[in-house]
Image 1 (tube, rainbow, N blue to C red):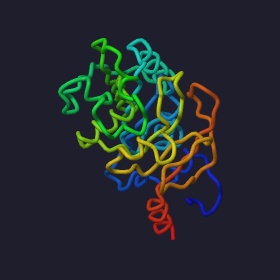
Image 2: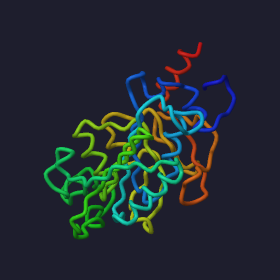
Image 3: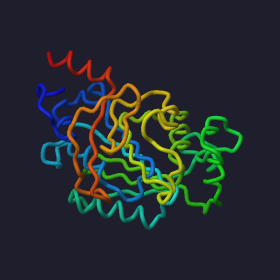
Length: 253
């Protein structure tokens, strides 16, 4: 662990790693949050890990990809407003997103398909997301003063992850938070789950609820922490791939 064996907060741990936290100085944060709704807590993690005071200057760019099948344009506006308030910025450029922006031809590419054997372990999984599309797919909000790019998609979290990777988008930190059927989530994101199996390139870090099981090959590296902007008062911790932990330990020797 960074700073010897002292337990650290998630933000403190990432900040302490410096510009190489995402692999090398040219890499930037790319956070993926399936089932996000209006939870801005994980944004605080990638924002404050870049700047000691959560203000300029930031040492890198950051992208957050939020996905939720139940999101609406009005709810995304709430997220944008909260970011503007939390980080004291007024400038935001908002534009609509289409499936073609990710090399996809249709909205259905971001939903599970009934004939896809990848989902056979969860009965009727595709049918649970078979609601009619209302023509809204998503929004992009760019905050130039914060060097933050927020992409919000109305899609199913696992299939969206698969489709984004086809477009060569490989998040380096993934949020794991099970919200259950009341949050339109019908498969767990913990442990050796479908989301884990969907990852063609595993992220360096997981930002997960302390109650949940990390993916295989990951180890908890921080204490639990409640983010300032999160929806509910549950703790999340940072976990890292064991190969990443070994890399960090070698660098700190």
